[in-house]
Image 1: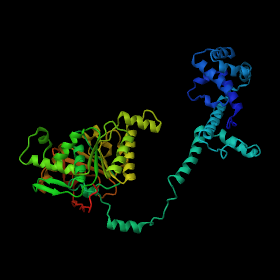
Image 2: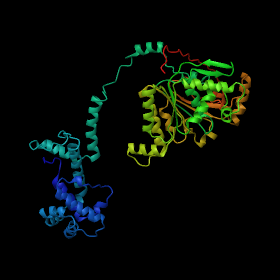
Image 3: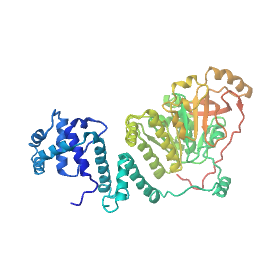
Image 4: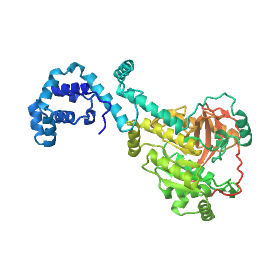
Length: 513
């Protein structure tokens, strides 16, 4: 066996002498004890005996009680006697410095830390504490002083920083990335001339004027109170992106609907059949209750049949993920991107559950994390997944009770944590009209010659967007999952004129599906 490195025998002797003299030190929660702090078997036997006797409730610990304890452990007793344990205990008790126990405790712990990095991780720590230095006394004293004046946590951080520097350079390829402001500007200018920062169109008028569509690498959040239609709106967007035909009840015919973009809808509360009937209803413009009750108007069965055929040939996927963790979400994203070439990811509903609470607490090494911490971490991870994989992600949350009395509809109304909105690129809230809305909006709708809205959408965050802190007044037919914005105002009900942008989709020569 080679020489044991990073061990301070005088500190260990003081350590043992102090706990032998005053075993109540073992009850101090600021101290932790392990046999790995001792490199010699004899020291392990002595300390282990003292510790176990104290835990067993021994009111007095001396050489006789230790020997009685070791009688049933002949191998350890032999080690004890071979090293003249009784004499040793008497000597350490006589020479121990109880007032300095804290210093010796931490000296032992620091040596254990260095020894574990050296033995378990194979690290050469001579740059920090050169145990073999016997000639350079100035260097030796400087290292001793440094060790005495830094905690175990600070020492570990310094060593880990060295490891992280190596990883950043040779694994993550981290380099100096401060640049002059015009670097790459010409390429960016030319790229925007050819490919503007616009994504695949979402469903409904005006919404693409505000969002510039479902942009890859972005994370959108659309929140609402229960039964307002956030899941139905999300189903509509998923179908609108993945399916190349949709029924237009105004023209009374099926119309082209762009390209078939690989899309997945992940259910955190619903089951497959619930989402499937919503998809049929959206594409066919047949109210879902007609489907569920098997009571159809003329022509509706045929439209449902065609909707099913469209879905069948579309790159539209479903996944149930009810009791999920962050790892589960990551795995679904990676699988969908790799195997199904998905670029549009819809996660029905962000919320905490026992599985994700346990996972996040374990990752953070913190017990009792609050729900707002967990929800914020989900939001951060979703944004990272969107950016890292170059995909569009949309999700939703519930609202807290304050929404019923609010006059400004922003992230402060999100249930659980307003910090969820910190990482999103677009944030909106869907709400039913209240009495004040009806009073103020009714004359505006009549003036414009349009039907009275029955839903409003507050756009409270719109990164790199022209329109923000506005209300979209909509006609919502939740039976067909279709929400059609009619016009926009600010929060004071003043009309905002905006052009209804149409994002034209050029079909690919070859389908990606």
